[in-house]
Length: 436
Image 1: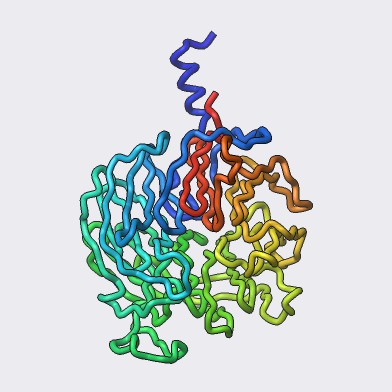
Image 2: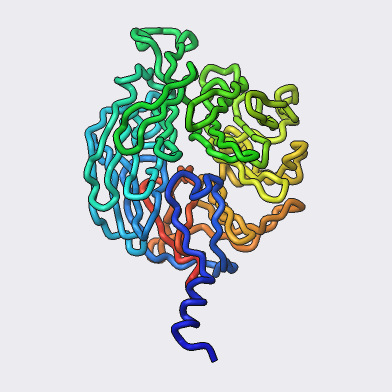
């Protein structure tokens, strides 16, 4: 018989403990490497804790057992560090904000925190970028990107989450020349070379500024393709590809709806040497094959009719698995469909309506699917059919009222076996993968 200590160590080693340090997880793909998922009871997974939130749209980020959540309380944007297992507060940092949404959406942050070692970064809706210490919330540096770089407020403020690459912090900023805020015609807005800015992570000093692109709501995506590092930014007018250490631009691929009030908000998906992009207001999706300095268009939705487009992602990012992409296609709540398409061709494998606009997390051969109305499903990853394992509408045991109120627009996250979901004003932590 194995010694007890060795047995404990082996069992511990077989369980994957994974942080969720930034947008869409450790790989930026909304995929978790944790194992052990099982069908849910009819009432859903066990709730460990729940907490009221300020206003905002982003999820927390988690590292080393600590959860960092960014939201707004009255006229202050606040980063709160909590115990991820209990929700108990450890420290908070806040700063004044006067951001007001022009379209009557809430005026809280759109971007989740980014945790990088002993530092955590937050990017507010008004464009304030902060770097803080994870241990106590002490301010290291900050930059008012709107003021410093002439950013004219986009439709819904600033929403991109920065990425860390080596000693750099890379963020789409998208500033404009002086006086641009006085323009009455938004279509006349031009860039000033600050489409993307690389800051030194620990000082905030600028290493490089590139592109006249204006900011969108997609976050940068890092990838290694045939031994070379790439960064892809789905900016307001299209896909920008560059070498992240130097800022050297490889290409710009135009991709945006002709509708003025439209946005690019879904992150690019990189599979090998191919990059998939999608939006919901006009052209739909496209697949590119990339090489240093160039790209080849493999297929496109641009010339297809409205009903023939492969996928039109609004804000959710598609998840790739074994040659197929899964995501919520559709601009509005009433026309959104959860879809599976073939990556190589764009062929629609299946499409399911009536789930409203949904977000996905992939774990252990399954999807956690959260609809914007709070409907939670466990699905098998299956390119042949929509395959439901469990489903639940979470309700309060005493009142019977729904626990998750719309809009539930942020994708679920998973760390150390715990599933976190949020609706309007509430964060819930579930015991999804109990340790054995």
